[in-house]
Every structure is written in C-alpha cells, then in structure tokens.
Image (cartoon, rainbow, N blue to C red; front, side):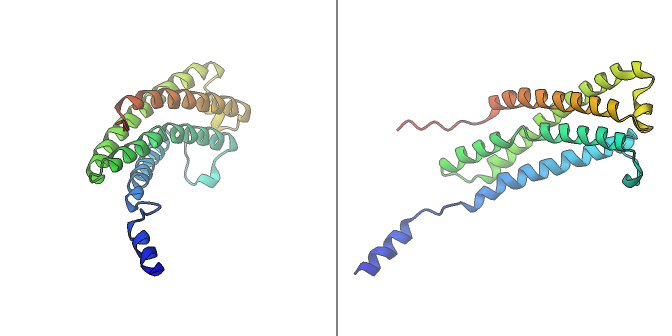
Length: 180
C-alpha cells in the first residue's frame, strides 16, 4: 500500500529542470559566438590583431584584449532578458521554441545595434588620442602605458554601453504577471 502512494507522488512530481531550459542558453551562446566572430574579423581587418598572435607586442595584446572584453560585455546584454522570456513562455504552458527564437532574433539585433554604438564610441576615443603622435603606431611599437590607458577607457565605455543596453532591452522583454 505504501509503495503505491510513493509511485503516485513520483508520477505527479514536476522535474527539477525542464529540458527546454537549454534553448535560451544555446541561443545566447550562438549569439556570443557570432559577435566574437564579427569582432575578430573587424580587429584583423583593422590590423589590431596580427598573425601570428605570438608575434604581437604586449601593448597590442592589451589593446586588443580590452576591445574584446568590451565587446563581450555588450554581448551579455540579453542574458537576463532571454531567461525572463523563457520563464514567461514556459509558465504559460505553450511551446517555448518559436517565441524564444523570435525573441532571440530581436535581442541579437539589439546587441548588434549597441555593438555598433560601441564601435563608433571606440573610434571617436581612439581618434581623440591621436594627439600622441599616432597612438596606433605607438601601440604597435610597444607603448604599454598608452595601451593600458586606452584599454581602461575602452572597458569603461563598454560598461556604460552595457548598462544602457540592459535598460533599453528591458522594454521588449515579455513580462509574466501572476495575479493569484
């Protein structure tokens, strides 16, 4: 008799994690890979990254790493939004794949928009440092203090763009309201 009660309770228990929780994680990782791919292509075309990477000066590596770090910061804008979207649609009891895919596309476009804003801001900052007799030439030849200074400015700009992006993306996140 006790054995059948345990069976019934196990039959009606909800799983700890739903298998669909993998979907937002996969969408976020794919978005990050796409953004990083675009970033490395742009850095290579702009001659910030030299091939082979082992031949780069430390100052170039610091500068490139701070740009990549700022890009990754901005790419994390939709993490909370994607998880909130998953929770909202899974709580409604509907299939989560199509709404998540739609929202992932919207979030990706928002991230691209803010990455372009970051690129414009970085271009303006780097151009404003040109008073130091061609800052990029100095970075290529090993000016580590200049590269650290630019790196800190780049990361700070990335953090500001991240905060603004999170506020903006919050407007398009579906909200689940529990009225009970």
